[in-house]
Image 1 (cartoon, rainbow, N blue to C red):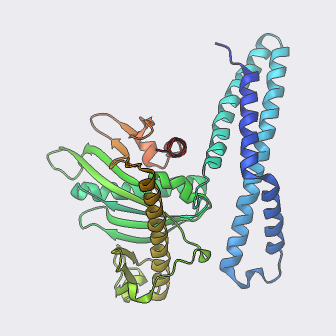
Image 2: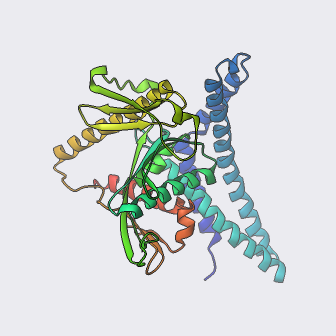
Image 3: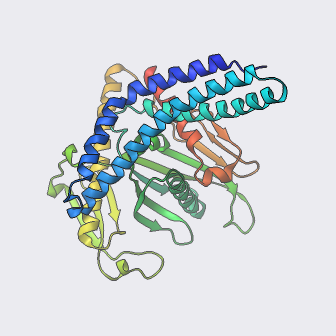
Amino acid sequence: MATDFAAELKALAQTMESVRQVIDLDALRAQIADLEEKSGAPDLWDDPDAAQKVTSTLSRANSELERILGMDQRIEDLEVLVEMGMEAQGEESSDAMAEAETELASLRKAVAELEVKTLLSGEYDKREAVVTIRAGAGGVDAADFAEMLMRMYLRWAERHGYPTRVMDTSYAEEAGLKSATFEVNVPYAFGNLSVEAGTHRLVRISPFDNQGRRQTSFAAVEVVPLIEQTDHIEIPDNDLKIDVFRSSGPGGQSVNTTDSAVRMTHLPTGIVVSMQNEKSQIQNRAAALRVMQSRLLLLKQQEEADTRKEMAGDVKASWGDQMRSYVLHPYQMVKDLRTEHEVGNTSAVFDGDIDGFLEAAIRWKRSAARHGA
């Protein structure tokens, strides 16, 4: 069946119009102008951290503007290519139309990715993210699975050029991780990764079982928005219990020689945060407090959402106990149980190719919210 290029091009142009309305190009250009002025200040690098934030934000804003304007140009170029193909004869026409088909498929994917960003309109979706992974039931296989998931997310970030910072790693005795916490330091990281929160399940022949039996194991993923100074989450000192201890981990890092690691417990809720990857106790304490504030912020948001649901008489849970299965035996399949999105190339998924899962889940979450689920 021949492709209806006119209808396809019209649909792409309409989607891009909605993208431009949500992203607001005028506001984006104004932000770029403001950041360019700040980046040109002679005293910019007096505060290296602030300078780095300005330059990286400017780079991302310019990339976003170029991406949107470039997409509009690609749609126009495709329109010209289709016209040339229709006017040409014989082999020349066939080549042009084949090229147009390839570009149309690429454009559909690129525009869909941009469109997903417009769905991220939650209160904290624009924030950077703090991700914590914990091994669940399944013994050493669960600890190994937790490490596989951590690598998956770090590889996803690396594929996109997103900076990450590992905040804490608690190694299991035999292999893998008991838990790990890391930041993804890019705008919209929380909006993108929040759909990963929940219970993940792995089914495989255990490499740790000398009888080669099949093992099912679980890991929990928690995603919270990174708090900002303007959030004002005040935590009274007497609500916190702070313990210091010697950092642990493979190798002979300098962090292992002093009591620099910090374990912070929020007594009213029982939330515990450990930090050991910074060099000093002061840095670990500051990092732990920041993550603690992020978790309390999300807890407050969840309590408010639960209250709204109770008032509306809605008792149906939004998230099941298990949201995704990774099956390596007897067949190869990764399947999201909420969206039905599935992929047979499990190696690619564990190597960070999870954009399809994120996009499907973001659309599912937006649709569920729209229908009051």
